[in-house]
Image (cartoon, rainbow, N blue to C red; front, top):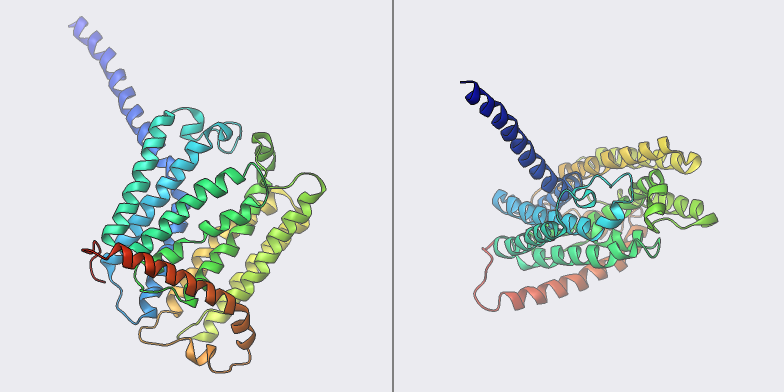
Length: 364
């Protein structure tokens, strides 16, 4: 009996350790996907899809929404994983990232690489098969630009923030393309909001962890006397532009409520940005970061609530009606409208090539 008890006492801790190891491994793979980033990606993608349906006066296809969100989530998770694979040696030098699974060595680099490729590949195939080629092309371009343009530039020039903002703002366009046959100026406005939002969001992070970035050799902020003016410009100019661009959306009902709420949100975000550039402390940077995380979901929720009336044409009364307030905005956004038109032509050309034989995509 005593020998049996001894064996039992030896086996129980071993099994317990095995269970903890399995849970730890699953947790590490989950952390590779950057779930906190994916949360905002899903929100902006979902709102883009929702407003794309409303723009064409069609009921919301929940199956199409779920397919678009799932495919986008897989590609985004694969991109985050591959980013950690590429930067594992540098992440190990930063207090903020040294505990990441790849940087800490808890997962082998080959396993991280394989996991990232599998996620990104599965997401791309899923978008092509279950959604449409337009969304697939946009998701693939986002991944490639993030991994092969933004990621290496982080060690070469502070302009990496600008370069990274282009793919970083793509999720609402992916969502819109997942349901709409063409990108419109409204989709471009959603893209512009996320594009501008990234600058104060990242400046807060870069300032809080500037010693970490310097230690790892990242040049996300310039060195010497140029650092403070750079942070000030990269924070305030986008925030001021956000106040303007958030007011150029097209509410289809309760316009006064929309513009008042949108102005309050943007001015509140600007307030935290002003605090940050005036004091440049870790506390003000943390408050700006928190404000950015609250601001984007609330603004997109406001857009989804009041810019979504089916069957309405929100552009004509304001955009083409000679309204004095929106006249300057029309002139400012005219180049953006032409860019959207060119992008539509490229995506439609790719779509025709992809569907020249038997289509992989179900009819919308």
